[in-house]
Structure formats: structure tokens, C-alpha cells
Amino acid sequence: MPEQSTQQASAARARALDAIIIGAGFGGMYALHLLRGLGLSARVYDDATSVGGTWSWNRYPGARVDFPGGPYYCYTFSEELVREWDWAETQPDQPSVLAYLNYVADKFDLRRDIELQTRVTSAQYDEATQRWTVETNHGARVSAQFLICAVGTLSAANRPNIPGLDSFAGECYHTGHWPHEKVDFTGKRVGIIGTGSSGVQAIPIMAREAAHLTVFQRTPQYTIPAGNRPLDPAVTRQTRDNWPQVRQQMIESPFGAPFVPSTRSALDDTPEQRKALYETHWQKGGLGIAFDSYHDILFEQAANHTLADFVRSKIGQIVRDPTIAKKLMPDYLIGTKRQILDSGYYETFNRDNVNLVDLRDDPIQAITPGGVRTRSGEHPLDMLVLATGYDAITGALQNLNPRGRGGVTLKQQWAERFNTYLGMAIPGFPNLFMIHGPETPSVLFNMPLGAELEGEWIRDCIRYLREHRLGAIEPAPGVETAWGEEVAEVASHTLFPLTESWYTGANIPGKHRQFAVHMGGPRYFQKLSKVAGKGYEGFALEPELRAPAAARS
Ligand code: N01
Image 1 (cartoon, rainbow, N blue to C red):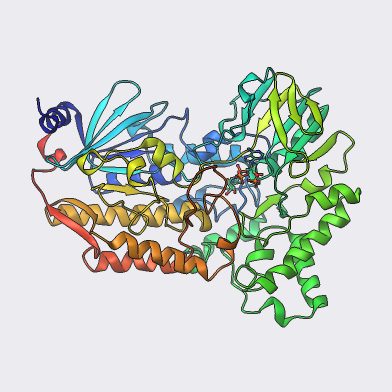
Image 2 (cartoon, helix red, strand yellow; image 1 turned 60 degrees about the vertical axis):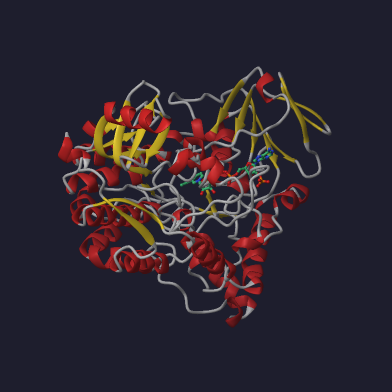
């Protein structure tokens, strides 16, 4: 049988739905809720054992929200939900967020359409039927008009290519795939590679429990005290009483946070005034020190240096051994790697059972059955923790590797550089939508709120297609180039592209450098509305070739 008709026959045999959603985190769960609201049939597939996406996988000790938490880092679409869920802390820990997401799954009766421990092994578009066919690791074959990829921005773990890693004889864990049962560090010699957000959150707790902890650091990090504390009931009350205004303020703020951005430049103040302001923020904790102290910290190098100097001086005050303090001091622009919040990170290096290996002076040569060998010698270990991050933003999509028009795979399409329109759709991949895809604000905006706004845009788009009897939508030729230029242009007004980070793809050997985040925040979401208001301007819309699946089945 010719390939085309084989595909058609197999699509016809597959169970027919309106939409397939991959990923049961914040984005996928809400997409299911929204599509049900349109009366569509949809099913969610997720490899994890529970709903929650990143909050299901990241069970390492110390994992907690590193954004203004409590009533801000959560679903905002349901005022009833906001009123009935009580957050206990300003920076909720992973078990609390996971409990919340399980509560949401029950409250909105989502579970009956979510298949857990089910990995999508292939996804293929058929131009003749305008439908996607998906196969799972359990042998199921399902077809749907729409494929919604809510696969997570930080879900494809980066397992470093270090010689001998597989030969390590002790316990070895990646922070992004942490076991469900408690990992016991007691009495053990533990090593950790990586000092990003995950490492910095885990290190103080591991140090308290382990006999000895060796921290292998390649790049030092600026971290700010999280200032986690019990949530003031008055704040919760006030937030609930003013919920529509609070939600709107977050939608309109640059990072989707309930901050009122400062109008002052760091250079407007004297050094003494600046220091006093930074000190107030440092004592309070949280991201406000970088995001709402002055408006130009992330935009002007001279302003940025004032805060970077302040944090370096804090490291010098906290860490007693000046040699170790110096190794912990970063020298790049603060905030241009994902800003970390910690609970006692720098203080940990005053402990007798902790040592820091600076891999810039003393690189890893190999991992051996008994530990890590650096140039200076062997570090014997019973346990090795990889806090080495992710192939961020594009990695999980490329691992899924859907096949679009003409059988072209996403890996082929993005071999040189990724391209999208609005970060929502990919040329040559009709009826595929992404939530938190590359070239959306994703990781530089309140992620649950951003997932809601993107999900609502997808819902409205699908409704439009159905109302206008359209069978397929994809970016019109060339729009992706202009969109890529817009993303680069917005980023170029900030300091972010000047630093090597996972935002630029620099953390993965061989990955091409391309800034992956639209930094416009509200400007981005306005653009989404504008495109929808103009009948999905920039998209090519195809008439329906056949009746939609739900009508046929
Ligand atoms: O990963 P990272 P992460 N040899 O990429 C090092 C979010 N998050 O999991 O900087 C030696 O930041 C690497 O070194 P370098 C948050 O957005 C949120 O910590 O590349 N070292 C770096 O130190 C965050 O930004 C929460 O030189 C190697 C570290 O590993 C994002 O997830 C909590 C190496 C990786 O840091 C990722 O954070 C945690 C090698 N071969 C994370 N390869 C919340 O609380 C890599 N490294 C919501």
C-alpha cells in the first residue's frame, strides 16, 4: 500500500478524539479543562506517576517555588479555587504544590481523561485527514485533529557526558528524576555536580544530613535569600478580596508577578541609598531585589554592577574562608542566568563537612566506581547527585519529535535553529500547538498564569476553526522569520543575551545558540490577542476536508 494510504488507514483505525494533550502539568491540565468547556473530547498523556509535571518529577530535597508564591504561583482562572486553597508559606515546597495540583485534578474532575505512566512514542500528522495520530508505549493508537504539546520547558534532563559516569558503583540520582521514596544521606559521602537552582536548593539540606558533602561547581551563582516564611493571613485575605485587580496586575506586569515595577534607576541613588535599599530587600528575601528595587538592573550594565557588587560583598561577609568565598563569587551580570533563591546556601560552606571543588581550576577527568576524579585527585563518594539541569525549552519537544507535513520530523525542522510563530505553532506542523514553547515568555513569566493565557488562546483558536469549518491551521510562509526577529529584538534591549545560560542553549554541548524566550511579558500576550482579533493573522487556514472526529464518532 502506498505510504499515504497506509497512514490514512491507520488514522482511521485509531481511537478518534478532538484533541490529544501531552503533559499533565499546569499547562496540560488546564488545556483539558478548557477544551472540555468547548464540548470537545480530549485526552492527556503523561509519563509520570502523578499529575503535576515538573512538580511530580522534582522531588529532590529543598525543591520549592522560587517565584512570588502562595496565592500568586497557582491557577488564577477560578476565583473559587483561589478562595478555597490555603497556601501555608510564601515559597511553597514541592509536596505542597503537588498536593495542590492533585486537588485541582479532583475538583475539576480531570483524572478520567488523564492517562499517567503513558509515554507518547510517536506523533504523526496526516495531511489527507488533517489529523494527528499518536502512539503510546502501551500500544494504544489515538487520533485527533489537534495535538497540544504541554511537555514542559525544564523536563528533558541533561545527563552530563562525563567519562565513566555509568561506572559509578554508588547511588546516583538526577534532581529532575528524583525517587519517590526518601533518599537517605545519613552517614554517607555525597557528591553533587551542579550549582543551579536545583543544586543550590538541595545543597544545604544534603549537607545537614550527609557525613560529608563535596560540591563540584563549574560556574558560581548569585543567589538571594528566599525569605520563606508562613504566609500572613492578612495578605491572603487582601489578595482574595481584590482578586480581579491582583490577577490583572500580574497579567500586566513584566514577569507576571504582583510587583509594582520601580520607576527609579539604580544610578539615581547614592551608593549609601542603594546599599540600604538592597539590604532591605536582602533581609526580606525574594526576587524583588532584582526585579522591583530599580527598573534598570536587567537592562543597564552599570546598574547591574551595583547589585552584583552588593551580592558579592554578601558572599564575602557570609563565607568565613576568603579563598572559598572568592570561588563562590560570580563575575557575570546578575539576573541574566535564572535568578536563584536559596535557604542558607552560602552559609553551608562554613560547615566542616562540606568542601567546594572549583571545576574551573580543577576539572573533572572521570567518574570512577568509587567517586569523582578531578585533576587534583580522587574524591571518594557513596552517592552522586547530578544537578546538571535540562535541555531547556526545546529538548522535550525534540525528544517527542513529531512528524509534520511530508513526514518531516521536528528534529529535522529544528536542526539548524528552532522556528515558531508566536511560540504557539511551528511551520509545517498544522494543528499542533505548544504551551510554553520556545519564543513565548514561558520561564520569564509567572508560569501557571502564562500557561492559562496560552491555553485560553488555543481554546479560542480551536473554537474559531470549528465555527468557520476550518480543518487546519499553521503559520503562513515566512511569518516565523519575523517572529524570530521580534524575539531577538526584545531580548536585545536587556542584558540576558550577554550571558551564557540555558536561555541561550549554551548549557548543552553542541546546541545552537538562540535566545529561546520572548521577554515582552504583557506585550506578548497583547500580540496574541491582536492576532486572534484579526482572524488569526499570520496563519494559513485550510478548509475542513472532512467532518470533525467528534461528529463522525
Ligand atoms: O539546572 P541549571 P537546574 N560538569 O542548568 C552544571 C528551574 N528550577 O536544574 O553553569 C559540571 O540551572 C552547570 O554548570 P554551568 C529554574 O528555572 C526551578 O539547577 O553550566 N557541571 C550548573 O551549575 C532553573 O534555572 C526551581 O557551568 C555541569 C548546573 O549543572 C532551571 O530549573 C527549582 C555540567 C545546572 O544548573 C534549571 O535549574 C529548580 C558538567 N558536565 C530548578 N553540566 C523552582 O524552585 C551542567 N553542569 C521552581
